[in-house]
Image (cartoon, rainbow, N blue to C red; front, side, top):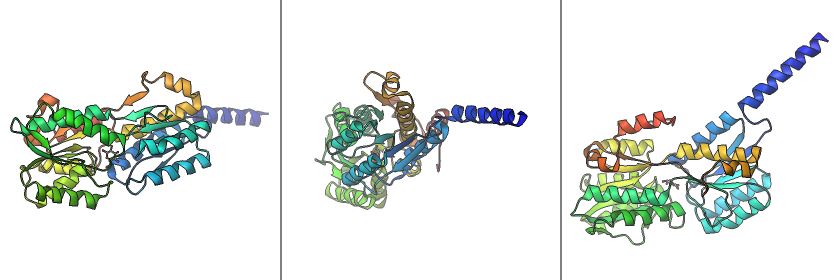
Amino acid sequence: MRKLKLSLIFALCFLILFVSAGYAEEIHVAVIGKSVHPYWAEVELGVKKAAEDLGVKATFFVPQKEDIQAQISQMESFIAMGVDGIAIAPSDPTALAPTIATAMSKGIPVITLDTDAPESERLAYIGTDNYSAGKLAGQVMSQLLGPEGGKVAIGTGSLTAMNSLERMRGFTDGIAENENIVVVTKPALCDFEDTGRAVTLVEQALLTYPDLKGFFGVYAINGPAAAKAIKTAGKVGEVLVVCFDTTAEHMQLIKEGAIAATIGQRPYMMGYKSVELLSKMVADGVDAALAELPEDRIVDTGVDVVAADAYVETLRVLEADSVEEYREKLIGLGIPVEGW
Ligand code: BGC
């Protein structure tokens, strides 16, 4: 009898421990990103941490580079496997919409992260407000080039993903305040997130426009690619790079002054919050999870402007941080800082 009591107490303690550490039943969510890149490694870090904190299973997948078909196939596999929820960063919102609809019709909640598909049946979006962030990048460029302005080229990894299109639309509005800035690349140079191609395109642009004054790198891949080509051409300080993201490579190039300023997104948070929201949808029901979100079901993870020492004072009007200030901010937000 005493033995039975003891084992009952043990079982109860175990249950309490298990439940307080996370969800009692195994929940399996999947996150689909866009490319093999340190940016996505940061998203994955957030995904893994949330899975650990909540006691759920999370599977992370990225295609080698921008690959709409690979995203569709992977999403179909996850649906066939019967995962409980999916977060996806659609490389093409129109192409992914039918697969999102299929998942939803099978009772698998779908949300977007990093880049949205608002016309699809997705339930919510977690990531940057890309129009505003693009506009901020335009204002940064305008502030850096000053009233004389000059020619600016734009490089991106996608001409279909909404985040890329929204950033470029915002950038155009951000530089509109300075009529002497002329964008020379129409459409933008597109590398489909292929690093080698990204560098070649910048090298070609430097030859085509010897008087280029600025380069706007839309994706994480573009800023470092531009900085590399500009360094090789001996034009650091002559062609100013304004870009997105803060991987260790970006931070190194900012310290060198080869990148003048960058818009730092919060990829770790995107990964973490996606797993958190999907798990809540599965455990408590979609309506209960959505009730905790803003009415438009958009979770803005926020951005920061980070500038090289030579430009940080000029950019204080746009609330720029130096590398060191930025590091402190991230630590304060509980975001791991690695490799810089
Ligand atoms: C974008 C992602 C992209 C990544 C890598 C980021 O700025 O938000 O959509 O995949 O760069 O290039």
